Length: 48
View 1 (cartoon, rainbow, N blue to C red):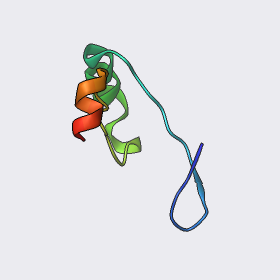
View 2: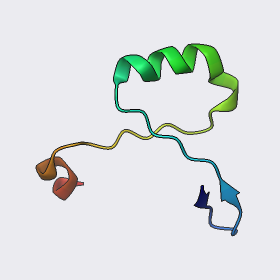
View 3: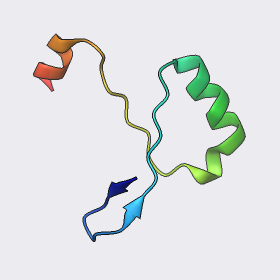
View 4: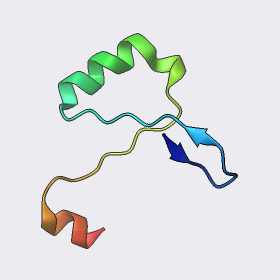
């Protein structure tokens, strides 16, 4: 769970494989409000 700007708790889920993300999206597209890709290597994180 994560706090939104208004103090509400929102569920957050992380998936490590792009294939798993595509499969999950096919099944549950109406339940998802935002998708964020987080880079795994240190250099990409620093550039963000």
